[in-house]
Image (cartoon, rainbow, N blue to C red; front, side, top):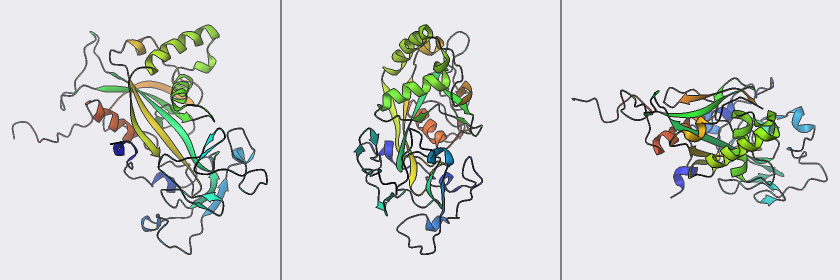
Length: 301
């Protein structure tokens, strides 16, 4: 059953209703919880229209405006090199504009997002076991489970710690995006010499060609989402069981990342967007430490 992978992530529509909209002073129209769903009639709904200047400037990664004569997107299908299908099934298109499957956000247009409809991202979650100086796995004193670590980056745009992910380029396979984004953000691959790049690619190939777990696929509650454009991601866990591959890769922040480090996984993490929920799923799948609250009750009771 794949339902666990693209089953809804809890609290799936909070960040998409926050103001001001990222990178702007734009305030969304307020959407109460009982009016989020499109099936609820709301005749007075009056969302604010906003698309960032950086998107309207027409960069390669962005669509034109809906009413431009040369633009006739094929929604809900692969449109040339651009994937307009959603991981969550068919979405509605109303007056030529796709409609956010999770509901109203208080803002129409695309905000900071390049594509009308789904904007596909990929989130590589690279993990290893926390070890002591002798190389033994460290177990948590309360839960008794081994502690897992993941590579986290500090985002330059909002200062929050996050998984080093990014947008899928047109025509790019998700597996290539995962590898590229991890290289750019956590290993600073863009600034390396060609010899260093070659060596890096070999090590990355080793890490990314082993067995992996797809942790989540689908809609992400993200502060950049609008009524007509939203982020969907594929979060994939690549685990370095022995720790040997990652021992030979020096973490170095690059591209959109301000800092990068190995972070212990637990329920105390505070991360960007829905990333904590992805990390929790990794801990569960790997049977690693997550919480100090024992679900079986305290010993001796």
